[in-house]
Image (tube, rainbow, N blue to C red; front, side, top):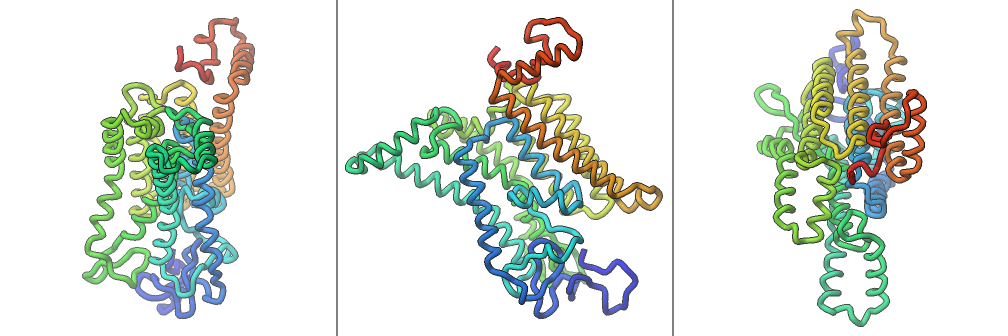
Amino acid sequence: GYCNSTTHEWRDSCVGNRMGTLCGACKPGYSVSVTSSRCVKNDNCKPYWMFVYLARPTINLFFLALVPLGAKTEWKTFTYVLQIYPILTTNNWLRVISSAVGAQSLQFTGGSEKMDICTFPDMRMMHRLAFELLSSMSLIILAFFGFLVTLVIRTLMKRGETRGFTETDYLFREIEQRGNPKSPNAGAGTPQRWCATLISGGLWVFSAIVTLTLQLFRCVQIGGEKRMFLEGTSKCLEWNWIVITIICLLPLLIQLLRMILHSRKDSETARVSLLVLEACYREGFKWWEVVSVSRRTILVAAYVFLDSDLQALILFLLCQIFLFAHSAIRPMENERGNTLETFCLSALSLVSGAELLRSDSILSWSNIDQTVLDIVQACCIFSSFLGCIICSAFGHYPKAARVVGHLLDRLLCRKKRESSDSPLHLWNVNEDKR
């Protein structure tokens, strides 16, 4: 936080070189840090950090475009864990992973001043949040630009405008034929691939955009007027509630997008886009991506608008509800996906439970070692990542899945039976074809 929680002089109520209402402003000659709530000297601000932030979405863009994973069950689960676990823990080192890849954007609490990064002199908190929001949205902007470019090239080629450029035409068609246009694996030079990348990129940075937007427009009542929560020296915008309402309704926009795409099923691009949103869910639950996005919105809203112990308690209860709902419904297309999702949701529940034990109301009467809680959270998070990697490997290498299935049969001392009765059915990549 910004305020001094220890015994102090009445004029020394702020920490981190801060001042003003709610300690929301930096002292003269200081700029807000990008990575923490502290303010650092303007002399320490380095503009080249801006290029580091802008390089992150560019790297993510090419990864999503060249390695089409948007429709994979393992990828959906991996991105969900990567976006949600940072809001469930206050451990700075665990948050670094998600922030580094742009899946979530949270400032570190406490920590060493060596972690503080400043981009521009006299930067305010509102400038910082707007800059990070632009950095997160740039992935969507770049993917949309790539989609438009490939769409224009395709249109010109169909009209024969590029007939004189035979080498370019040949290269484009060669790239296009590397994948099946009816799947997200279509060639990297096709509009279908870039449309799939656009949707995958939007889901990748969704939680970061929601978090930054809600923080940017959160207000509190002080002395008869509304002030920005993270920058108490600035008055609240009158239309801030409109932005917050739109953010909360984003899951409905996903459903609207599905309806539009279903109405244009004659389009190859629409079919590929639907695969990204629906391919990993079983019949009758193709709309489950709306639920997944809604879960992220609810958890992020609880993180932004609730404080202290109540925040930890509500996040813990929400994680239990989401785990129970998934275990009861099991919406994934195959058992491997359902098992992985259940495992990762259980891990997130343990992370939120450990954070609840870390809260002041519980620590006041218990002697729980903070290091133990850090270890538990780290094990839960990394085991989730490992589970996603293992399931993805089994999906790409069916022979490895069969070997594991036979090993499980022997370990459980069972006789060889049909594959449908074997533990192999948890990993069988061909299960959905039976």
